[in-house]
Amino acid sequence: MESQSLPVNYLPIIFQMIVALAFVVIVMFVTHKLGPTRKTADKLTTFESGVEVIGNAFTPISIKYFLVAILFVLFDVEVIFMYPWAVNFKDLGSPGMIEMFIFMGTLLLGFIYVLKKGALDWD
Image (cartoon, rainbow, N blue to C red; front, side):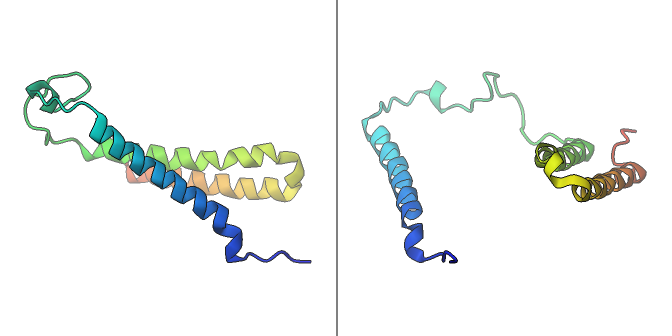
């Protein structure tokens, strides 16, 4: 017998989302109304990790910095896909090993492409 997904089965999830959203709205409203509202010059200044703000925030930053950061996130997230494989290594057997070699080969090809393009050169 197949179980069917009916709209009534989603009512607990919808109810939980409504309760969570209502809780957030109520807490924000109550803290805004009951909290202190002393506005001083120090409280209204920009806070940058405890350091006084000096100069313009729009300073030029090398695109290489952002490129390396994006590549790090890209390859780091792809490595996360190896954890389920490692946990189920014995259950997956030879087909799982072949698929992981294909995945690692694709990662290696992508990394070689990035190196050939010179994306990591800091000249």
